[in-house]
Amino acid sequence: MYHIKTWEDYLTAYEHSVAHPEAFWEEIATNFYWRKKWTLPLECNFEQPSIKWFVNGKLNIVENCIDRHLQHYAQQPAIIWEPNNPDDAHRVISYAQLHEAVSRFANVLKMHGVYKGDRVCLYMPMAPELAIAMLACARIGAVHSVVFGGFSAQALSERIQDAGCKVVVTTDSGLRGGREIPMKEIVDEAISNLDINHVIVYKRTGKPVLMKSGRDVWWHEAELHAQAVCDAEEMDAEDMLFVLYTSGSTGKPKGVVHTTGGYMVFTAYTFQNVFQYKPGDVYWCTADIGWITGHSYMLYGPLLNAATVLMFEGLPVWPHPDRCWRIIEKHKVNIFYTAPTAIRSLMAEGDEWIKPYSLESLRVIGSVGEPINHEAWEWFYQHVGKENCPLVDTWWQTETGGIMISPLAHITPLKPSYASLPLPGVQPVLLDPDGKLLTGADVEGLLCIRFPWPSMLRTTYGDHERCRQNYFATFAGMYFTGDGARRDQNGYYRIIGRVDDVINVSGHRIGTAEVEDAINEHENVVESAVVGYPHAIKGQGIYAYVICNHSPEDESLTRKEITDVVVRIIGPIAKPDKIQFVTGLPKTRSGKIMRRILRKIAEGETTHLGDISTLLDPSVVEDICKENKRMM
Ligand code: WTA
Image (cartoon, rainbow, N blue to C red; front, side):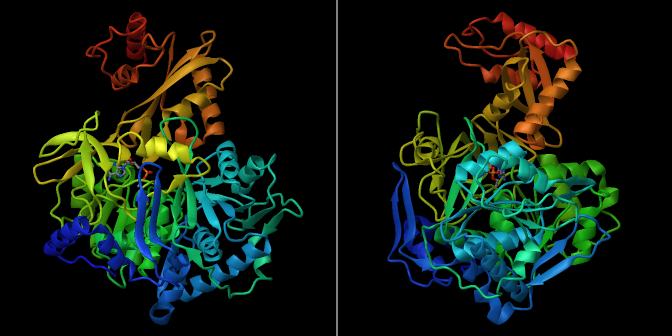
């Protein structure tokens, strides 16, 4: 693998990657097993966009994740699974066992009519079988679309339809802390009006579920008829590997599409270099596989490096807030990658929970998903890393496929709350709103990437124009991230946050428009406006301003009903934290809601609201402020 070992290596690699990007990536790509080598490293046009890496290269990513390692690492643990309940036994799955399980399930998929190019929806809790199902899809060239278990039946249904999935894989139920999530029941509701050929159900808890005859099959029963050998399908480098839905600023969630070759090269390279992974390390990423972090850094990136991945089914604070520290001690975790929300909630529980445990094995700690505030950074660095472990604050997105800006552990000098420097091969720039390039130090602007990288999104499923509009049309020749950032004198980047109408709640991306659409489904709601506001644990909370048809007789009852509607339509992750009933919303003369004002009020700022003279009816603002004060 391409290994950056020193600061000098980093500087040289970066320079080389800018001067000769194609040669740089080709050199990295040679470390993999290709059935047929590419004929051209890159073919790219940002206008359309049309992006192809390793053109005409043929490979299978699972051969690279598993088969390739069997010669030396067959008995090495690939996955260590720590169950929700600390008293239950953990499971260890070696590379040889993973190879067998994936091949067998790949055959189960084929027996149920799944072939190359077909989309399969996976709605599962954090069980090794989710990883196995994903790899089984990739082995036969089917496209996986994993939907996070926190989404409701309706949200799941939309995603199944959008991707045209004919097969769904799920479990009877899932466990998260003290709660049981009825996965199969949710799937049944989601597909009640859809034409789904098969639902394959893995028995995780033994919860009784209805099995529709002809359609539903048990995983363990189907496996009895499946062979443990399955040839990997030969895929083109640009064949679709997976779809993953994420929220944007407008309308319904979009299916971000990643392809095979470039995604493989980038996730493997970034995993190795950011975490400075060494053979034998135990690596733990706390993200759910249902998000991109789970795809890239729980599954593909680590397995491509023959790493041992710890997969945890439960919650960091259940049954007690020492669960993480217990797990680190028990499995001698060397690399611990988590999210600011988890860090803040663990910090709030106090240091006493850490003290009894030895965290000696830790060598690198990491954070992803939201800006990490100074206080959380320091706490994580001091109390968990014991000031010995570099904290890699990794910035990236579902769309980028892998880590773009981050320190390299033990190599890049750290600066708290800065994601620091781009990885070699990544060329970030800051622009002003007119698209002018901001050069020099201490500037703040819109974060864009100006040269393609192998794991960038290729399209949004079924709607290429939306991909163009969203990411490539704002500034010509650039990929626009939707984030704002600042750059200091040393070229270090600090990510400020989204500049569009996307809020980041506990690291989950939620489009304000989606929440508004859901709230508006309540029979008494005329209109609503949703904004984010600073939240001590979640990073951002959801604040909803709601206009009702007739003023609610019982405000708290209506609030609860509205919350229930959001949970039904999107899922518990999008529950509004605060709902304020208003009689009007601040709108410009052209009818556009001025969210800037609503954001300030949600933050508790009611005096310095900026220019409100362009509003159709400025008195609305006064009323909202008054009501806001009453609520506080
Ligand atoms: C935010 C998660 C600050 C950012 C991998 C981005 C971050 C969005 C960081 C993507 C970070 C991610 N510092 N902000 N280290 N990492 N973000 O698609 O706003 O779930 O655009 O991917 O999270 O979220 P997504």
